[in-house]
Length: 188
Ligand code: SF4
Image (cartoon, rainbow, N blue to C red; front, side, top):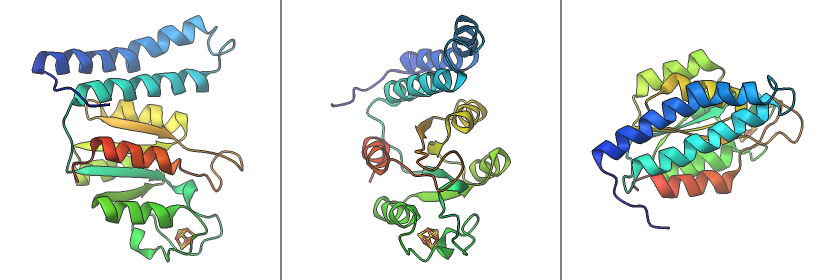
């Protein structure tokens, strides 16, 4: 689908809608879900992240970004991998035991920065040091939700990770979704 060009006032309205979604709608949903009892908070956060992504899509219009940053969770790395990739992704030997191999390849193909964050503080530091125009973040719903709020008004497109072995252990990334998102937002 071709994206349309968006005017300045429309962008402002969409940004305000994003604030409303993340800071007000979330709490309205919490109340109507019986404080997360009738409808789990995890699901509510998932819905809010999806809405945020749709709003970012509308907000950015035809615009594509050069300075994109892909933020990944540390639990994506194969648990028994002996190499420390948190600060130096180049330490990865691309053995294929985890998807870092594929993600590094994608980052090279599109020529953008790829970082692994071990938590919110590190993620904030990476963002402050690299000053990206656009972030694609992969994490669990909880970390995505807080990360998107922390980075406002910066556009952070959230992709929930896959947890076939339970949370925070050998997690996976929906690669097709990452590729599609890059195709939509990345200038190259
Ligand atoms: S691809 Fe292999 S070397 Fe790279 S982080 Fe995963 S397990 Fe470690």
